[in-house]
Image (cartoon, rainbow over all chains, first blue to last red):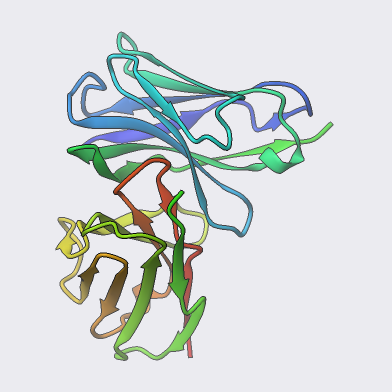
Length: 122
Length: 107
C-alpha cells in the first residue's frame, strides 16, 4: 500500500526557509485522482491545511500562507516538497504530508506520513 | 473559508459506552465531510469519508451521518483503543479546514 515519509531539518532559524520533502512509496505520484498535500499541526492544536500539488505541477495554497509557500514535485524521484519562507516561531509545528483522494475536486486525506516536528528557533 | 465547529471539545466515557461527536459547518457542504482519529504522537487516520462511508479496515462500531451543515460521528460501543482525539474535515472547498478536535477520555 502507499506510504509517505517526510524528511528535512528539525530546526530552522527565524527568517529562514523551512524545506521538507515527502517520499512516496508503494505507488506512483503520477497516478491521477490524487492531490499531494501538506498539513501542519501546531503543538497541542488542530490541523491546518497548507496546500497541494498535482503530479502535473498545478498547485493550490492556503490563502493564509500563500505568499510564503511553494510546493513542488519530482515525479522521477516520486517525491514532493514544501518550502515555507520567512519563518517565525509561529511556524513551529508538526508537518505532515498526505495524499488527498479527490472526487470532483472534493477530497479527504489518506494515507498520511508519520509527521516531522519543525522548530523555529535561533 | 468554511469554519468547522466540533462539540464537545472533550468527553469522558467508559468502555462499552455509546459516544456521539458533532461537527457543524459554517455553510452547506452536502456530504463532503471526513472524520479522522488521532492518537498521541501519531498521524491522523481516516475513519469516515463522504459523511457516512466507512474507510476500509475501520471497525463497524464507527459510523457517520449528516448532510448540509450538521454531521455526527458515533462510536456504538467504545473500546480501549478508541481513546483518542477525533477531527472532522470539510472536503467541499478550498482551503480544506478541520474542526478543532474532540478528545475522548477514559472515565
